Image 1 (spheres, rainbow, N blue to C red):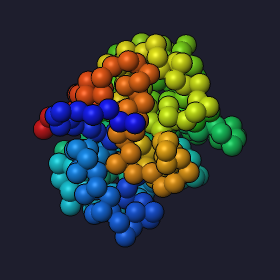
Image 2 (image 1 turned 180 degrees about the vertical axis):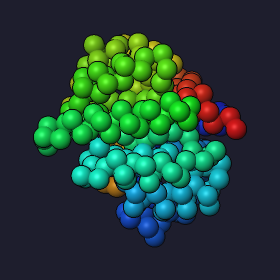
Image 3 (image 1 turned 90 degrees about the vertical axis):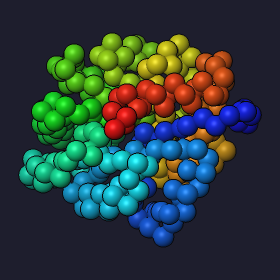
Image 4 (image 1 turned 180 degrees about the horizontal axis):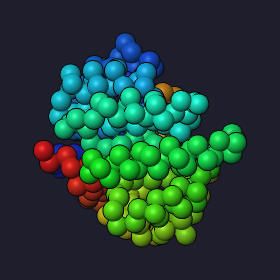
Length: 263
């Protein structure tokens, strides 16, 4: 249950793919529902070249609410991945807030791990050149991603999206100056992540839904949307024993500073 608050507090969903086909007929409804619940900003990571156009269209239509990132997701690497990265990142402009969603995914196979490492490093170099943070996908690859990102310690910032690792990994990530992206997993009854997160400083956390995936309880298994970020904030409030309002304020400020959303 969400704690009652006597004042409005802003929430930011730092990771939502609301430009995808799952939201084709209901984008406006989803955004309206979110803003009415005081979710003031929705940050959109890219997937591949085909998603650039619908994502940019949405960020242009809802300026100040929807913000875009650019990058090639590791699950979409093909033999011409370097060329695709170049095409995607040619769309970088002053409104691009990050290079993402990039990273590594070793869930199904490690066969193309060298290409994944190369793609990640190429896009990290773009981020450095453009002075942008990175948003990292790390499914079954947290340690491998940490190894790559460690090469950029002190020069690169960003977030390990959808974190589901252990405390040792968490400390390595925060020691690199990176944030932890927390989503619906922390609300799952069987999640061991709650024990890990109970030991973290809230200044190292940003909130995300990963819409349309990973809906939090009580909507697990259904299509996710930014509106549900409040359930994640509420669960974090319980885990850290911090008032809901404070969770919203601090995590939103973390996101604003990381992605330079002051402008």
